[in-house]
Image (cartoon, rainbow, N blue to C red; front, side, top):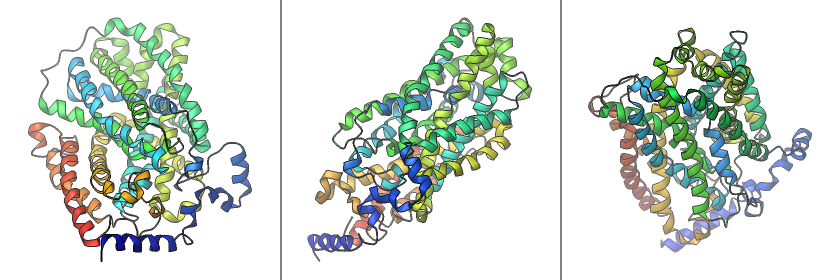
Length: 509
């Protein structure tokens, strides 16, 4: 059978399935099918109910493209970015200079994938992990969804702990970390519950008080940053291990990048979206991580900072920031409260994306309104945050490094699929080679076997290249942690070969 005949058969099969998958043809009918008075009322209040159903071209009308910059800027301009920077000196023994060089160059590299993937939202109208079905398949995508959920819940837990610690630090023991965590989580729940419009409005403004707070802290403590604790010369092991933490902080955004751009007009310049997103990641992450590294290098030499940082024999970034702002009294406490609230934008955006991943993990939940999963998210995050609140630093170091490995595999798979296989399909050039009517049909999507197999096989080499507190492999012991770099390169080679075999075997993409 010729290629044209196969494509014609595939088109016939696809068209015959549209009655069974009407939601793929008319995604805008989703809210009305709910027939739910509450849902209809929430719609009138501007609450977004759409889940993983594609956004049709006629509903991709948003022209305020700059919002993606502010969304990522506010999401990352918070005390978690500051905390990640402190790991350079505190966990890996690097100097301020060496820490900042690692932060700068690895962030410049690792911000590229999520910035590029954000450009797919306006063209396809698909959430990021929905688009991944075109490489991982209908059922295979469940695996990266699980890993992505683990990563997003992990980030939400870390942010909740850090925000709760910081909020509690201003009360002199009158407010427990647990109460602080609950306050942070509830604010985040409200923002994610409302969805796209409210979330973008909040993120456009949330960075301003955070900037003021950090500028005041820098002004009050800047004189101490010139004196740092002596360190040993940087080693490859320390540099690459810290780099793996930095990579894990930002490349995991690749699995949710287009979740926030699928309402933009399809004719927007991809370069514009990519640039807005790239700067939205790079500027806040680099600036606050470098500030965190500088403060961590000086804190042991400033008694008040050291006391705040090690409050209660636990590493407490909130206590450190409160100590830096304490010279201005109650105003400093007020600024510390603002810094504690800086994590809410990150948690809310993460809750928003968690909703789509849950629906992909259990496809039958597509009929459930998106906002319901914000309630599910907080029900999971709250107890985990409270239980893990006293092991924040260990959790932060291990978590950020480990999640970078699977994210490298994910990026490799979707990029190889996009650049190598999809351009061959000229029938759907207006949608970058993707037939969007296939998004919800297991028979018309790839099997996902090459993607899953490639991702699993990479860990045969990634594990020996690890260098973390939990495990140090024989290669990682000598080189430092190079797991995420190895995962990407190896997955590209494996997926390219395995997917080529699949296309040859099936006769179609």
